[in-house]
Length: 231
Image (cartoon, rainbow, N blue to C red; front, side, top):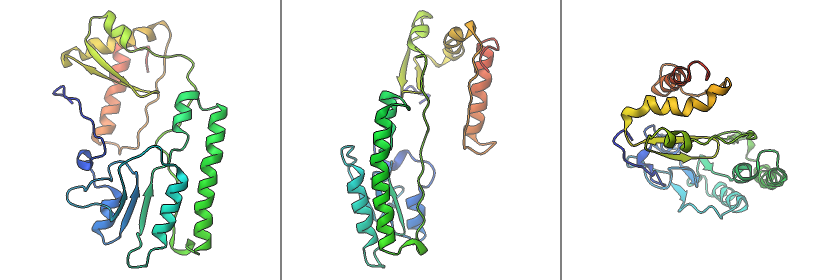
């Protein structure tokens, strides 16, 4: 944060500012169940899901999740959850490791589809569709990388102390001295001066919100620091 502290949200819900969906459901009298949904392992401001799988275990596959979802749906009406949220592996790991066009992606998609089909067949057999909605969502897409951007090198060459935390397709830069922000932006923009670069920024944040304004400011600062080469 701005004070220079490193924060690891782990599986605790205290870092969430907006009311989570499972908490909103419970507040309105709808039982909720979560299977490894981020932030659902602990209560949020004194309220949490009636059913929750914890602790997070990445080795648990989708077959066990489908079994548990169907088991929740088989509970008596008075105990059955009206909202079930489950995190699935998707193709995240093979995509980051091998790229979006790799054979590993195709194999993982087939395995995920098979479990999704088993879930849908379970809903069929229970005749649950009149009162069931299934939503499949993803937190991001993927694209193949042609070049790797090294954020550490230009900062070090400019004598700017910083810690770079990379997440694969993005990176966060934590400066030792916040007053060096503009200098850091200029250093990071140096490689772009050789040829124009277009960075596309997108957000679901409502226009006029803090997050929307921060992204706009980020784009303006990149353009300024690169002398107009980054747009």
